[in-house]
Image (cartoon, rainbow, N blue to C red):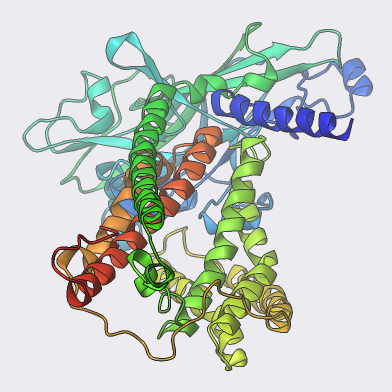
Amino acid sequence: MCSLHRARGSVLVIFLLLHSATSFYLPGLAPVSFCEPGQTGKENEVPDCKSTIEIFVNRLDSVESVLPYEYTAFDFCAIDSEKRPSENLGQVLFGERIEPSPYKFEFKKKVDCKPVCTKSYNTNKPEDKAHLDFLKKGMLLNYQHHWIVDNMPVTWCYDVEDGQKFCNPGFPIGCYVTEAGRPKDACVVNSDFKDKDTFYVFNHVDITIHYHVVENEAAGARLVAAKMEPKSYKHTKVEAPDCAGGPMYLNNKFSGELKIGYTYSVQFVEDTHIRWASRWDYILESMPHTNIQWFSIMNSLVIVLFLSGMVAMIMLRTLHKDIARYNQMDSVEDAQEEFGWKLVHGDVFRPPRKGMLLSVFLGSGTQIFIMMFVTLFFACLGFLSPANRGALMTCAVVLWVLLGTPAGYVAARFYKSFGGEKWKTNVLLTCFLCPGVVFADFFVMNLILWGEGSSAAMPFGTLVAILALWFCISVPLTFIGAYFGFKKTGIEHPVRTNQIPRQIPEQSFYTRSLPGIVMGGILPFGCIFIQLFFILNSIWSHQMYYMFGFLFLVFIILVITCSEATILLCYFHLCAEVRHHTHTHYPALLLPPLC
């Protein structure tokens, strides 16, 4: 009966992993109901029913620049009275800066060309000229807005090739037509954008809110999509805009006074086909398709099968020759004669010269490996979805901090097996070497971002919090793990190590360090380069990464690839040692028994 329950549990886990690789669901998020203003009866029945919809704004970024900026850096319409929503550690580390905006409207109340604010510039004033130059720089580099409604991105959907529709979770602040008359980026969407060496400001947005009325449940409706279309209007009357003029242009050599009026329109559409639980699907469907992911997995599997075939051939060949030679022995003297891989068995387990560094790297690697495995497992179950902003990074950092004990234990256990006695140095290096290098790099980059005024720069309080997690939690846990590691006996080797080391023969080219490093790096990289492309896109291009099922499968394949590549590299090194020894001490008529 116990085995039956275990089998059922295993089948359930496998089903969840496979299901997460092909589908997407956002658990743990409570839906928000919206009601029309004035429906007090329904609001009394549902205390959480809201009538006002707020738009929150996030940082602005660009694929042509690595520096994101806060919304207020471009002198857009903003409000200072409201408090910014709290952000978790992952959001701050990724540079997200969410703040309220003056874009607010009532549920199911249509709005046409409502003014938000008017920005006036005079190029004769240094401050105004600096704001205008920064705005032009943002349009030249195609910086993108990122707005949020009900914890869901406001998307700009437009048609692409083959009749498909692409939904971008951001929209540009404007565009530029070059001196040669070539429109750049978003300027291609409008034929009126044709003046040379001219910037066009998207100062108007048409917002369409799709909602779904929930039947047989609480009163009110739920938002299932938020789409918008940026437009440019040079309002004839900025105080009373009508959204009917030509585009709002700004010549690159403009000087004088300029007024830019920002407006918006809102309409509501009832959608009975999209449910709240699947409201992210229309965004994710326009992301890179799953057939590319399957290609990535097939590419990784081909590499694994190739390596598995080589490992199996080597093992069968070696074992087959050993067994055949044992069967051909005629006397005890022949059995005592060493050959094949036994020629170096007394030197294989000799402690390395850099045993301290090796043990420290093994401990830190164990910590990172467990962190990645647990994080990907929870992501596969849907707990670290894009809707939980910053949850992925927060989970990874917290797990890394709490996994100091395995790092200290592994490092101490291996260092003791190597015969090391400087246990204090080993523990301190495990605590501070790898994390210290990462933090130093992070700190220097943060200083550069702070000097550039980028929103990606970490606040001082966040740096203090990271240091507190490191020194107050991770370091003590590493000491605890090292204590138990040193308390246990060292790892016993299956054979005794010779007191006098063998002379290492001259290495052939493919057994030297550099070719081994290249081979040991290219094969794992070949398994993950497609997934790595999507991950880097999600970081630098503000795209959402959600296919954690595929990533988990590729992670497992990567572990297998690294293991098999390690076996092959060890085999090649043993081959080189044995061949030299065989040709030196055996007659030329004897073939090398291992290679």
